[in-house]
Image (cartoon, rainbow, N blue to C red; front, side, top):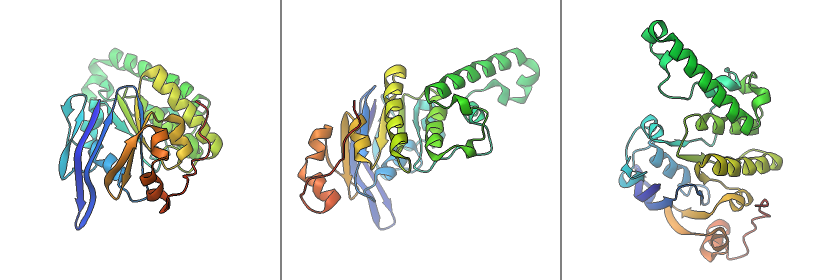
Amino acid sequence: MLIVEGICKRFGGLQALSECFANVERNKIIALIGPNGSGKTTLFHCITGVYKPDGGKVIFDGEDITGLRPHEVAQKGLVRTFQITRVFRTLTVLDNLLVSPAGQKGEKVSNVFTRGRIIRQQERDNTNKAIELLTMLELVSSKDELAGNLSYGEQKKLEIARALMIDPKILLLDEPAAGVSTEAMNTMVRLIREINKNLGTTFFLVEHRMNFVLSLAEHIYVLEGGRNLVDGTPHDVVHNPKVIEAYLGTRKTLDTSKSIGR
């Protein structure tokens, strides 16, 4: 579904990405890992149009989307979240979801007077869908709460729910477990599995917490210094001497902790 071919990105004299590649198959959960500064988020930015790559291609669902703007990429069905939550803090949890769907008839002033019935039906449909997603993400009891009052872990879940409102084909998650408790991380693992299974959403995620990655990923890509280092199954990757050396600077055993039961 997603093919990243030879992506390069330079910032002045810094070569941030060099010939990076990745393939994300439909309905899979794929991870991208690497030490701090290895280029993971930069690659996500190039895929989703935040940055325009200096070389290479991004092919999504058979279409070259290289260089499209972020909203154009999202409209294609490739949606992302960010490291730091970006919820609308002064809107309710429910309203955070209702702003997401594209093509809302009520956004056109003339429709308010000529297509009122259609607008009301669309709003009911969007509200019903939002309630279903909030129920799935275990946030429905907070639907009338201001988003800024949620815990950080709940805001992470809210961002995922908001992204799901536009029916993404692939959801890119940038450090979904960062800054949350172990309990919240375990919940996130379970919810991502359920979304993948029940909605068929494909996931491509960046994460530092290896137990989180090992609990979810079917295939892992490793970046180091802006280049692909290795890729493979979780077992092969975490036991690869190159990966151990990149993370620890020495070929010891990489402590991944215990992955959460699959």
